[in-house]
Image (cartoon, rainbow, N blue to C red; front, side, top):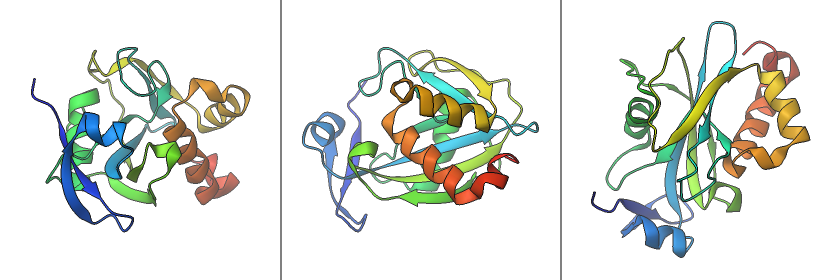
Amino acid sequence: MSEEFFDVVNERDEVIGRAPRREVHARDLLHRAIHVLVFNARGEVFLQKRSLTKDTAPGLWDSSTSGHVDAGEDYDTCAVRELREEIGLVVTVGPERVMRIVACAETGWEFVWVYRCASEGPFTLHPEEIERGDWFAPQRISRWMAEQPGEFASSFQLIWKRYVNAKGRKAAKEF
């Protein structure tokens, strides 16, 4: 498999170059990623437990799907691709953009667009990417994260807290 290349961006999320994945991560270069939160009709969100072979956050719980935006790719296309590659969800309409997070240490220096979509599953999990996955009530995720933050990827912790805060307490119960 050939090495992945990412667009390197500046502090305004403008492309200023390209570099291999290993270099981007080793040098903490700013780059792009997406996270998608998949909700079912019961209001539960599907979380994945990252594979132990992942180079970042191995074995930690994370968004339904997440991934780097490839060089030359846009955020929306990446979200559709990652849904298909990681959990086997093929969408005919791209997921809804819900918030943007500026690159920071918690995201691994990634500018992140967070998306939301609906599906009942079942999903086909990519074994090299995901150890397992399950549906969780939003309130359970918030309690679990408060009690055991070390079980979650740092980027997901940031995303989840901002998502819940943006929706407010009432909305958090209505996901």
